[in-house]
Length: 319
Ligand SMILES: NC(=O)c1ccc[n+]([C@@H]2O[C@H](COP(=O)([O-])OP(=O)(O)OC[C@H]3O[C@@H](n4cnc5c(N)ncnc54)[C@H](O)[C@@H]3O)[C@@H](O)[C@H]2O)c1
Image (cartoon, rainbow, N blue to C red):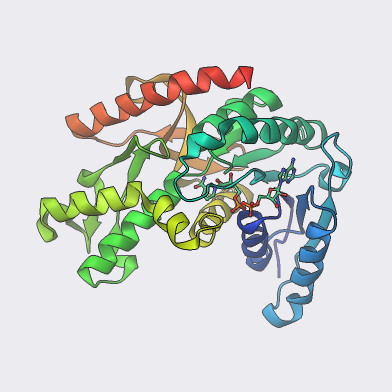
């Protein structure tokens, strides 16, 4: 296949990381996918297994697995990555909020980010570890990378969940539904009903307001609903689909507009915070934040979300 190029590393070979590596490898557009973890042998074993799927699935991307240590051992296998996806960290257990993970995951993400900066100084970094907005801000601090090269994944997932719930409720194909969520990944997620359509018609015309509200609430709790069913671990099929699509947009220099956690600097009258917004994604990371028309209520919700995450992001430097 023409055009296979580049190296992408997925840090953390748990459920999120291994499914992301699988999706990235199966795209067959990268030369190499590197998968790492601190659990001895786990990334090597998964990489071997993924490589053995290549004749069946018909992809040539090489998958490399490497065990790493906290002091940076093994990171040489990741050197010169164009893209790094950070999935390292604990997932939630039933009843836990994403914020309950902050202290443990901050230690993990900080050390991962420092090693990434040393070995892949030009990479675009996509963060998924929770709590998402804070871990994205921390990764930017710990790498010292330009802000447009550090992006968080949340909005693609929240939007996908909302889209699925609307399609399921109306009994229509997911492809006919467009939804949008902005804000933070959590309680201050901001659904944008004015931008939601079904077959091009405004959502408000095809679904009663109370039902839209129910689906918004279900979307906001979308992660917890899966956690409660699984009992151990959290969702990974939809999350990995979202992160892999972002990585692909970087690889392809696609200029695709996606809801992501990006540094906001003046857009919507908000400055100095990582927040869920739409952004154009290409080889350099975020090319620009795309402002969309919002109703007064939606804009107020976005500003509220920005203030809620701003304080917590300011604290991450001490973690
Ligand atoms: N942003 C989102 O939308 C979203 C969605 C789902 C899950 N998540 C988050 O993604 C993270 C991973 O979830 P998961 O389901 O894969 O969990 P998991 O427990 O299956 O995997 C996490 C992996 O990280 C590894 N790890 C820990 N410290 C490491 C380090 N220093 N270097 C490399 N690897 C390390 C662990 O050994 C483990 O294999 C969690 O924080 C979870 O909350 C985010």
